[in-house]
Image (tube, rainbow, N blue to C red):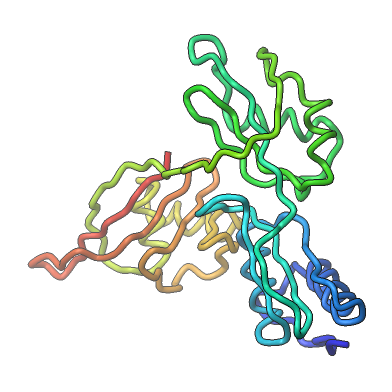
Amino acid sequence: MPAKNNVTGSSERGNEELIERLHDLMDQAQRTYQPMITSFLTPAQLMCAVTYIGRRMTYTYGGGYAGAEHCRLKLFPPYTEVDEDFQIVLLKARLHPRYDKITHRDVLGAMMKLGVSRDVFGDILIKEDALYVYVAKHMADFFMMELTRVRHSSVKLECCDEEVIHEAKYEEFHPIISSVRCDAVVSACAHISRAKAKELIQRGLVKINHVILEQCDRICNNMSTISIRGYGRFVFVEISHTTKKGNFVAVIRKMR
């Protein structure tokens, strides 16, 4: 039985319930010699889970397609074969581009109104002519029966075995910044003053790599994902070069 960790690290703070569930699943996997699968985890939860598990047990994770944000984590007891069957089903509904103008928020809202928890389904992808939703296998029939309308559009979800390729769309810009501190980078991302950026950080409205940013003076690393409430999601790619005055030219991408 895995020993409980009584010391809560920074990545585990606020995720005590998740840690407890992981501990129980690890214990169950070792007692039954059967792999165990979590519900869908957010990127921040997945990061916390991977940190907590460490080398205690073999694991893998996936969300149904390459680059998925919401993933299920699978735990393997000793001497069992590792696989990538995460018990995920892809559901698809055809859309009519001319009439069905629905957004990710519309679909998420419609699914949550069914009275389910967010962790029983993963990513929602909207293409030009189709809606794709990754769901836990045991919930597939429920969603096919109950999710029949999104906003003003009728939808008919069906099981799908397509391999969905999702490429993130973004706009790239190159602001000049005086520092790679997070408050300076947030200021550049959102086109706001440094004082306003500090205020947003202090109010808990900024996340770095899906974790709430607590310190304004933290250094922002290359390829960090920055989410700013009310302004969108960005990726701080790198510093391309330094100006003659000693400032930095940053490469930042705003995700669409």
